[in-house]
Image 1 (tube, one colour):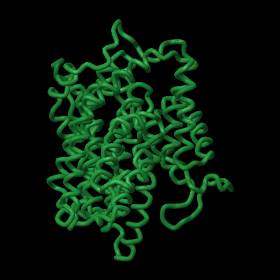
Image 2: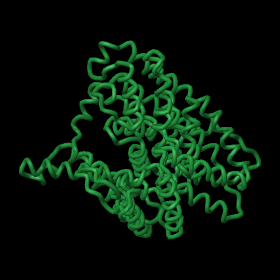
Image 3: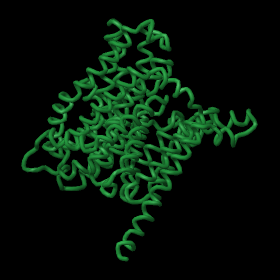
Image 4: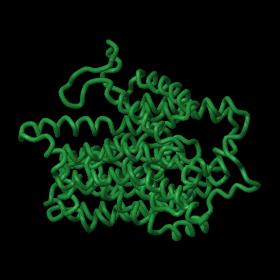
Amino acid sequence: MVAGTVIGALPGLTATMAVAVLVPFTFGVPPASALILLGAIYTGAIYGGAYSAILLNTPGTPSAIATTFEGYPMAKRGDGDLAITIACLASVFGGLVGAAFLLGLAPPLAEFALAFGPVEYFWLAIFGLTLIGALSEGNVLKGLIGACFGLLLATIGIAEVGGDIRYTMGTHLLLGGIDVVAALIGLYCIPVMIDLVATPDPHLKVGSQVAGFRLREGFGLAWRHKFNLIRSSLLGTVIGVLPGAGGSIASLVAYSEARRTSRRAMHFGKGEPEGVLATESANNATVGGGLIPTLVLGIPGTPPDAVILGALLVQGIRTGPSLFSEQSSIVYTFIFGLFIATVLMLPMGLLIGRYAFRSIVTIPKAVLVPAIGFLTVIGSYAVNNNVNDVAVMVSLGVIGWLLNRLGYTPSPIVLGIILGPIAEAGFVQGYLIGNARGSVVMEFFGRPIAIMIIVAILLSLLYPLLMARLRMRRPEVVGD
């Protein structure tokens, strides 16, 4: 768990990479021990991404993107230790909820995941894109433009369906498209590094005492917003069950719901603890949620689950509904090991967070900037062992810095890159299936789950407009 937390905190070294690197070490150990090792690394890495998201405005893993929305503003005003504390508490709670669902409701939730076809995934991706507009800081139009730019970047390379080569400018270097991790590092890290060099002010505000962690305040906030925690954890679990959705979508949806229902919605984007509670509980709940279709159906819910599935096959374990009856001792040992790793996250996560916060606050810029620069190069290269990814990372970083100066935030662009392939594959496959059945319109608008997602899309688009109307009318009522 500690190793996973440290790896997750380093930009570019994702949870998938952490699990994949350790797979060879599991070949010589019993199956239950191997699964516990991989599950604990996975759990720690998802939580570890919050450290750099809060302290450097750079998500260590893609699932921590939404944590930057509130975590970094909290750190800038001197509450970074509080942000890390509530991130740890929320991660533990979300992880326990996800593991509880894995223990008790694996088969029925896996059947629910099977009901999602290409059309549902298309609408789910569109839902994510509409949330980007709702979450944009100050300017919805710029947020949507950023998301469209991300979608355009996602079309570079070989098409998801059909294999057409697009927008490579005649070079083989872009055949593989824009790597998500390289884009993530470039758009988040490089602008931060440039700003660190360009401004003489300290990176983070420091009070007279650096507490390291503020457990009493953290518990108080978690209890005050317990319904937000529960809702976000349930959302993360359900979205984790959907193969391919992952923690980045889960945390974004949970953050949007927290903002929509909060009495302090106007404070979101300025360092609101509710946002950190929502995102961190949701992305950690996807760990247990994603393992449900992995173990019951053999369909990985998230990329790290695909690596864990490979390790299972190497160990001679066949996934499926019979797994819970024929090899129940291994599966339940693994699930309880996941519970223990999640509980251990509280003391170890707080301890690591305490020293991480103190280190980031006290390290001079002359040391901090080269260290971040080194990690960005290593992180973007290590994913595919491809130097072209480093060039893509630097290029997108400079573009991201220029766009930042014009008021375009990196989050919509990155999420456009992540959601683009999901939307494209879902749309093309749905269109082909609808064409074969004789009605494309009914394929996209006639399925029950698709209709539910469309309703959610309309609500997310109309809600900001309705709230703006209500705010305009309220002063008139008071005046009368």
